[in-house]
Image 1 (cartoon, rainbow, N blue to C red):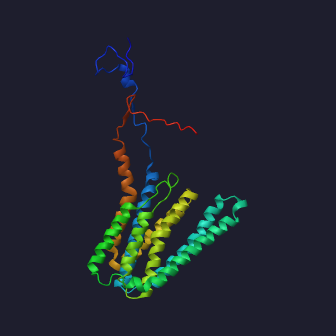
Image 2 (cartoon, rainbow, N blue to C red; image 1 turned 90 degrees about the vertical axis):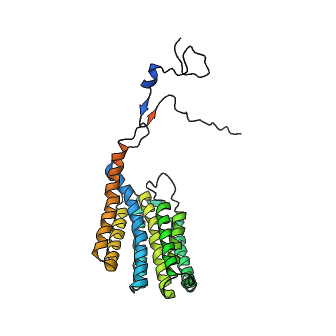
Image 3 (cartoon, helix red, strand yellow; image 1 turned 180 degrees about the vertical axis):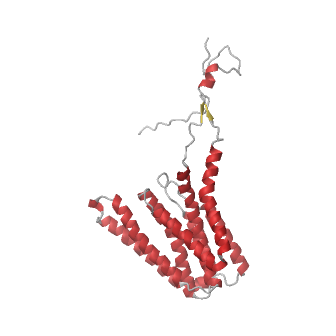
Length: 295
């Protein structure tokens, strides 16, 4: 009697019997995805971009709070970046949009709703600036710095990096709230309502609008180089701010750290992946197929 892979059938074989055909049916690493080095570099560059946005907001606050930077300058630069980004967005998405729908009322309505939402948020921040300035008046500065550090760390850990924006919806809800909370906490230590307003607007653009813009660009046109332009822009902005505040020593540390994340970690990932040994055979749990009947 030939052995059969049926548990409910009484067979003249011991319980620990292994049929010779069992090993021939085992497959190795059938579900392991193969990555190229430069594909992984693109993925890890998203981590670098998010770190750059978080660090840039912290450096800008330090410059305004401790070095007397004019808070209007970062806000104006951020506003100009928003305008340039909207033009670039229309250019990139326009190439993917059929000519018959480019001037459709729905698209025009969506653009107007976006602009209106931004204006409403700016107006709310402007009205609440005097309140935000005195938000943590009774709290010591050391507690504020520690709280800001904790918020930044959780922001980096909980951010939705959307390495493949086509597979899942982009939901940066937690990281957005952490970024906004950090901006409000830091803004409460500034000296005037103008400083608070300019810094909060700058932080909102950098920490909220930039990630949305980057994900939208990569989703609408994966072959576009706008992601790399945004990445290097913030990379250099952090270098300039760090050099003005601390000198070239920390700039070198920043460059080496980000280069290690973007270039060394993908190589390490590929090196570790060669030791992955996943076996799948006929005894692996089967995935149930649930057939739903329409009532």
